[in-house]
Image (cartoon, rainbow, N blue to C red; front, side, top):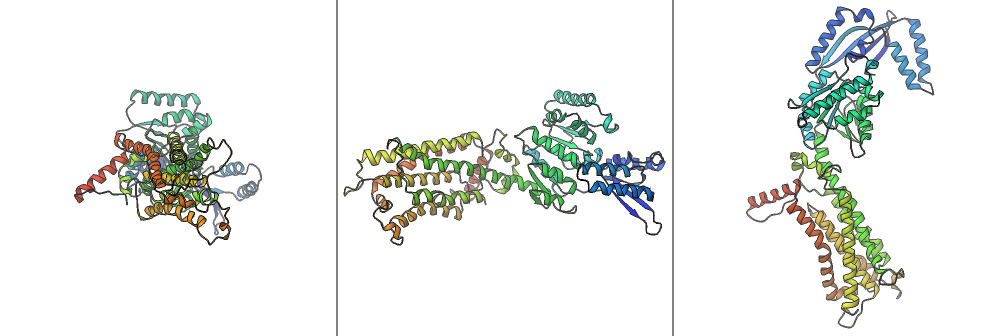
Length: 573
């Protein structure tokens, strides 16, 4: 609507008056003929244009005196529209538009809406990170352009293209005229392919693009721009623009940020909504996914917590599939040795049940909570690192199909190495004799060694991904290894569980195999061979194809060595 009205009655004169405030283009088309042609109105709109060029936010205020019979008839129909079961919104809008006619202009206002601190720096960082920034506002075009310049949404080095129909009515904009303007902008951009561009459009352009279903044509040229300014748009049009951008490409992720109730529709249409709570109320904050107190907090939300979380979640997803694949693949490979009889060599309770519950749960838990590949100050200083987590970027380093299948490929390789080495050495190399007193390896001993190798490999594989180690993370790794032996001891040796005292309990004595040197040599050899390719791949990526984060970590280590005069390893705080 871009306007707001109230109907009041003077208790002394009993006059019924409608007061309306709104954007100048909305109020102007609802003025009566005498007010529209008056000198007072012309002077008011001239002052309004002058205030808009200074960057002030402007409003027009108008009034209308209503007859009692007219108001009572309208009010009765308005009440019926409010309780209608069908087309309620349409009926209400039509009646509101009916009463908001024949207005008389009172005057116009212009206020300075000062930018919050660090807004230009925040928007510059967003653009440096490769994020396209759009400004959707209800202000006049001149006001929106000036605000865009003051907040670094566009600079004087950029070329401004205008897609405006200010002097035409909504229905005077034809499809041919709209196509011609879009073609002219496209040709101008093609003539200077290397020059950054900002497009400015208004509410009538958005209306025409939606009406003629030409939003895809506009988005094709908008995607080539550094930024876009949409002026005079209503809350519903803001939602239409966000939805159109979101649906134009499934790989595009949208974020809307606003501070008022008129921003709620676009906040709800975006993938991620951020509300700023402050002087304009809590409507935006209540409707958003995240609420912040200042606009510049968006930098830390995206570049620090957003980047850290993207990396943690990317590793967590791949690791969860990887560690469960490497657990079951040895059992699959064992089928070739037992003629596919379905024989299991894992003990259910100490091994299968405890694998995800105890042995491998805590390191990935604390990794997903606290791991930091670079410090927060470096994330803010180098916003270009934000692209590391983008699925669309060629530098996407945290999660992709290639990265996922690399993890699964490592799982296949490592499970094969573990199974073949343990079965080969226990069954063929040593002739099943593993102890000096002639003790032989049974199926449960082989299964316990394989399971321990799996737990060690997946634990140390995650350690290769850890970039920051603190006491809690270190303790979780130590606990994961020791818990395996503690859990097996409880199930095989303790006499506090009567159910396990039976001689038929296969868990009894599985720890005996770890009293022989050949088992520990086998554990070391198997883990070393299984993890060597992963270690070499990670090292070669850091040395030969370093990312920005790898370079910054190396510089931090060298700086620490220079300060201390000796070898030092530092991790982000």
